[in-house]
Image 1 (cartoon, rainbow, N blue to C red):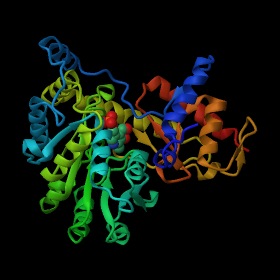
Image 2: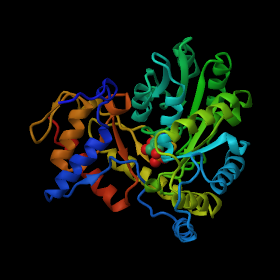
Image 3: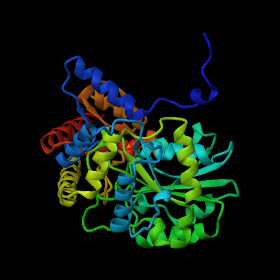
Image 4: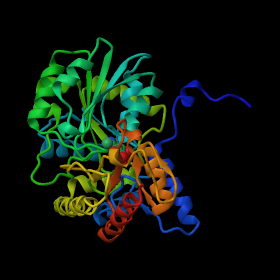
Length: 400
Ligand code: PLP
């Protein structure tokens, strides 16, 4: 058989997707599986976004769109950056992609040469590592330990930077921990970065509006304007507006980088579907109050799961400030045998046994670069969360 490329053979299949697929299979076979494994809001897309897409289709916005995004959407993004982040980007400093994921893909493909280093703060969203590797880069992992609230410490960042460092990726509120960084944390990182002009900085702000208990988001290009010409500020409509399937992500950044990213995208997918861009513009320019209301719902769910898991022996859980994830530590469950006779030596063993025996899907911490943890997504309704917690507690109670 003809061979696959060396490049693709280096990339393992996504652990999140593998877990979701196994859950789907079990459901197909009749099991009542609760999936807490996917990072997707359970709310519907706002009706005004759907109407804008419909109107755009009827208007004939069904042709090839510009690769970097329709001017109407780029203007909406420009206003969003000004209004919410105090950042001024010219229109040619903004680009639109098929999801935040393609923004990251474009950025790494357009900048990384073989052996270039990308610093990722663990736990991290696995896509950063895998896309960096696809682009020929090498990831350098800096741990953000639970003892510091999963925040990145400036001293740890300083120790990881080398002359080959090309990128630092920061993502607060964070997937998978829900941890946030405040202005002071970001300023401390910025101070280090000012000393290393060879480093691009990716600030993935996609969860910026999912914040609880009065926590304020701070984005590095605004906190330290002297870094702005090296920062790519990444965002998208997936999480804020519950629009994961529309595939619209965007970024603001220096002209030279944005132009290279647009070039990259031109050889991959070209522009994002015009109807989806119209929906995204309507979401960004439309009412924002429901975003705040939804954050309050997520906060209540976070508290519900934190309370529900308190009775799970062997599991302890950090209280996160944002996103819709919990990242419980399962160290106390290791070295034990489940009620179904499975030996739990790793967080992967834990996640698999929990799925097989209690029909609850979570993702093992190994997929996010820090073990032994599991990631729980609580973007599902309260009744389901209550039942999921009951099952997890029962599973942990059954460990011998
Ligand atoms: N960044 C983070 C941290 C994410 O968790 C995700 C999605 O899960 C994305 C970016 C990209 O989302 P999308 O491609 O839907 O915009």
